[in-house]
Structure formats: structure tokens, C-alpha cells
Amino acid sequence: MLRLSPCRAGGRAQEPDGAVGGTSMRAGLGQALRGLLLLSARSCSCSGAGRRRRLGQPLPRCSWLSTMAQCSTEQRGRPHSPEYRLYFKNAEGKYISPFHDIPLFAGSKEDKEVPAKRSKTNGSETGLPKKPPPSRAGETVVFNMVVEVPRWSNAKMEIATKEPLNPIKQDIKRGKLRYVANIFPHKGYIWNYGALPQTWEDPHHKDKDTGCCGDNDPIDVCEIGTKVHYPGEIIQVKVLGVMALIDEGETDWKIIAINVDDPEAQKIHDIDDVKKHKPGYLEATAEWFRLYKVPDDKPENQFAFNGEFKDKDFAVGIIKSTHEYWKALLHKKADRGAIECMNILVHDSPFRCSEEDARLIVQSAPPPASGDSVSAEVDVWHFLNK
Image 1: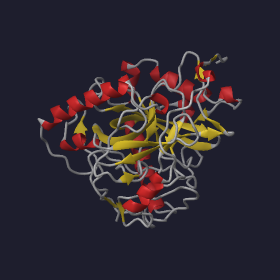
Image 2: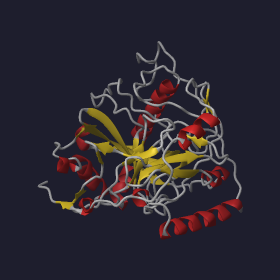
Image 3: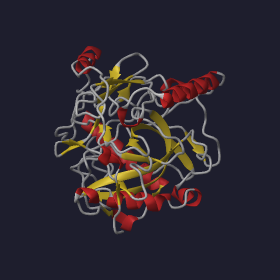
């Protein structure tokens, strides 16, 4: 049985592209402090994995949200360099993995679901449901999201799935740090981009709808709220829909979500609400993913479902299935390849390590230092025939 020790996670704000400090950090910390003071004056109880509310009802401000802000990040190495890493610590000061130790379901202190087993009744060779039943219509499930890339920035920051403790790092392609191109009229990423913890798109599982296997990563999230977030922040989001990108022959799901604290969250509940209240955003999202590799001399990406965005219930089903694949990964019931499964808080996982082991891993990384300069090429606009 998979159980998680209490993990209090949150985001210590950082400047875009890894720079630490600055006016935005002070503003973010001040805002967080005011939020915590408001939270301390309230009380309510939360239980179970994923609080659910009917549409139209305010999402609850519960005690677990105040603890989320107690998670911190620790920079190692120089920003804008191949050695840069951002490690995570929980409220007890333990180094943790953002991939494995932060709960998928917001508000859950333990993952009480039974680990994946071989089943003769569910029609799957691995014993894992391909698409579990969605939540009841009209309900909202709140998930934790690990922010990797701030909106309007270019550095391709990501959870390092093949490194111990899975810090955030900048992706490298062809020996160079990776920056996404600015395709007119967009600047960098057009949403806050990140991943859902405790999910895994299994590269050995062929999806029956897309006809392609997973991309071997946690499931991606595009957060469409009004606030710009920073690498290492952990925010609570409600899912609105999903699109199926086919990226170099692999299924690469893109979850569309919004921060539950966003001013527009109370009027946006499903993918149709995005079309109504943020006209053009979904079309721009599809265009962005179709073209973002073209400046690197790669072909346009393709989509399943003819590029159609699927609704919230479909998206939640996809998330739950990738959560089951992650469970199999953490219990050696799936071929993990080069994926690093070291964790601190997942009980009964054979990959669980000691706090001391985790501390030594972080200490072995280069010490923090001032960042390198970023090439002016990052600011170039690309004009493409669309």
C-alpha cells in the first residue's frame, strides 16, 4: 500500500529563468504573508484525497493550504548554466523529490489508494486502468502543480526525472541550454508551465485514443490564471480540460488548469468556460504547441482528436491513469529505464532513502553562485507562415 508521510509543500518565489531575489520576490513574500495571516484567522477541516465541490460553490480555504507555503527551494550552481539545480525541502527541512514526494491530490496527507496490481478484470495487461472513471459530473478535484516555467519566460526548466531527488534544471539539447523561441506575437511560454507530481506517462503503454506511447515524463500542465508564478512554486489547480499533443511520435498530454486562488477561478470550471471568458487563448495554445519547434528546424507537431480540447472529466481520467502508472513505477511493477525513483516519503517503496542520503546528494551539487548572462538571441522574434 502506498502511503505518503505528511508533505507540506509550497513555493518560494524566484525570478524568471532562475534568478533569485528582487522586487517580485519581496512582493510575492509579502503577498504570501498576508495570505497566511488571513488563513490563520479561519478554520475548516479537509479530509480525503482531493476535496470536491459542486460547480458554483467557492473552493474552501482550508488549513492545509497554509502549510503549503512552508515548502522551500534551494538553489545550487549558477542560474543559466548547465549545473544549475533547484532542490526542494518540506516544512521539516527534509529534502524531497517534487516528482515523488509531493502529493498529486491537494489536501491529501496520505495516498490511501491500493498500489497497482495485476488484475484479471480490468482488461489491461499491466493491471492498470487505461482511463479510470471520471469524477461525478459537476465536481472539482484540486491537484498540486509544480511550476517549472513562468509565463513569458523562455528557459526550458523541467523536473530532472533522471537525477536523484529530481531537482528542477534547464533542459539541454545539442550541448546547449534550451530556450523556447518567440513566435510572433508570443513571448516565450504563454502560460505558467509545469507538471503534476506523482504522475508518469508510461513509454511502454500505447494509448488507445492517440495510438502512441507516453513520453516518459510527469504529465504537463498549462496554468492559465492571471498571476505569473515562478520555478519551484507549488500551487493548487483545478483542471479544465486537456489536449493530446503528438510530439515526435509520443503522446504528450497537456492539461489546461487554473489556480484555485485566481480571481477568475470562480467563473471558469470547464473547457467551454475558457472559450467564453478567455477568447482566443485555446487557439493560441494549439498554435504555440504546433509551431514551437519549427525555429529549431523541426517539423510541426501533430495532435490527436484533430486538435480538439477534451473536457474536464476526460482530463481527470487521464490524470488518474498516469497516477496509476506512477504507482507501478515506484513499486518496481514497471520498467523505469533511466527514471530516478529515489524518494523520502513514499512508504513501502523500495526506492525510499534516508534523510541523510538526500542531504548528501544536495551537498554534492555545486554551491550557489551568481548567474551567467543570457544570450540576446532569446529575445528574437520569429515570423512564420502559418
